[in-house]
Every structure is written in structure tokens, then in C-alpha cells.
Length: 182
Image (cartoon, rainbow, N blue to C red; front, side, top):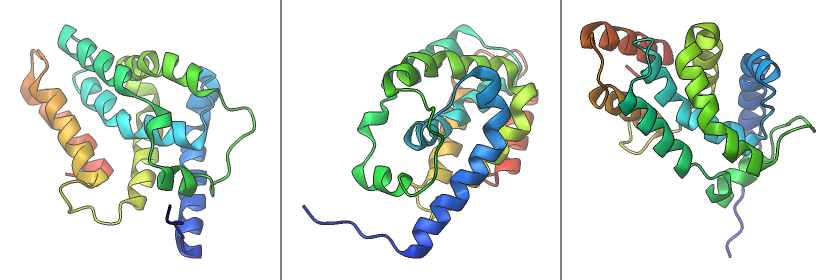
């Protein structure tokens, strides 16, 4: 197996970005008693654009509930690429993080909670996702985090039963603009 080497700059960037992410999410993690490891935090933020999109109309309809259930079922921290896990290990994390098993049990309810209560955490969530996107080396690539997040948000809106699509799209575009992915 080929050894993966990271530059000191890459390691430093990961440390800085994850420190910033933890700063933005500290109140949320404390209030919800949802202290995540770095891999859990990465997975959480990779799926949080779905909650942002669902929150854009301030309602969670039946289709959105099913979308969240499907997302939660597919989340597996243990399935992260080894190179990602190794890079994540360079960033500091608290000692009192939950086990992956607990994370897997709670992630669906946390995404639903945020979908319903985004107004309370909106700024922190957006700032944390923006920080994560600093790790996106090629945001224009069709498979980049930036494009993936944007597509995820668009698909949520296309598949829900909103009564006011115009307002919802306006709010979604505001979220995307604030994230820098519009």
C-alpha cells in the first residue's frame, strides 16, 4: 500500500480550518451535547446543506422527512477514505467526543432538529460550512465539495412539496450566496 504524504501546508490548513469550524459550532455542540470527532464533524458538515435547503421554507414536509431518513441511513463515518481520515487526524479534537455508533444513531435527528431550528444556528452553520469549503482544492470540478453541496441543496428543493417555491428558492439562493456556492 502506497504511503500518503501531506505537505506541512496541508496539515496546517486542516488544523486551522477545523479549529475555525469548532469555534463556529461550539455553542450548538454544547447545547445539543453533540461533541463530534473530526471525521464525524466532516461527515456532519458534508450533509448539513440538506438541512439548510429544507430550512429554506421553515417547514419540514413528508418528502423532506423521507430525504433526511435516507441521508441518515447512508451516513457511515467508518466509510471515509483513509487519506481523509489521516488528514483529519492532524487537526485537534476534544477528548470527550461521542463514539461513531452514537453519532450514527443521532445524526438523523440532529439534521431534522436543525432543519426545524435553523434560525437559531444559521450563522454558525453557514460559517462552519464556509470554513470547510476552504479545503475544496478545485471548486469548479463537477465532483468538488462546492458543486456537490450546491446540487444537494437544489435536489432537496426540487423534491419537496413547498407551498411557496419562489420564497423557498429565494432563501436557498441566499444560503448559497452566503456559502459562496451560488
